[in-house]
Length: 255
Image (tube, rainbow, N blue to C red; front, side, top):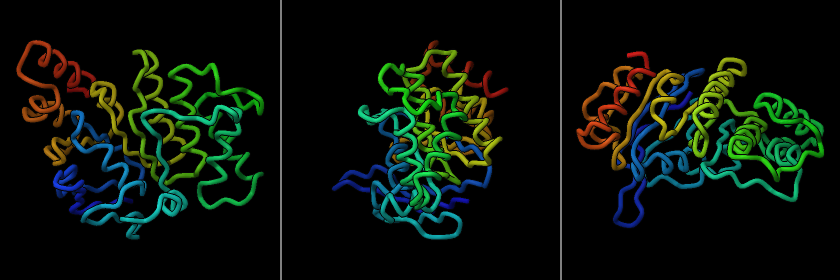
């Protein structure tokens, strides 16, 4: 479904992403992990059209989309969530999601957008009441709203950007299960950027690890969780806390 080749992004003399290549198969969940500043969000911004690559190719369903405007990319079938939810507080919960549905996939029918919103809200477990307000939603509710907005655009590929941030352990497990259900029930392919390595590892099919803009590891969760370079770079120095975190990541990955 997606083939990224030689992707580069420079900001002046700083290289945020350096010659990164990867593929995503239809129906797959690919986990994208790495420390802060490793290039994860920059890659998402290039895939979704927010940033124009300095070099490289992004083929989606066989068509080049590198450098395309965000509305062209979302109309073509790539939806995304954001780390920090920013809903329209003057609109109702339903209207926030319907607006995304109207914008995505080039829809020009309010009726179709409303139907997409109702389906998306039901999928993430939020009320479909047309008058329910956004205000009062907690961290978990706002993350669900982000997912609903992305789903309402009708994506073939979903870019999920840190869907677990600000959630407690129970809410993290619920959110992870929700992403897996979205793939299983709707057939949507997912790339999931996340810092919570242990939760991500039990859901994704494959994992790619970035450090300083470069890909340092890619493969099955169990193999990546046991990779000494990943443990050193992603989790830190060889301390007791690091070893405990690595052990937990491997346990959740089934190693």
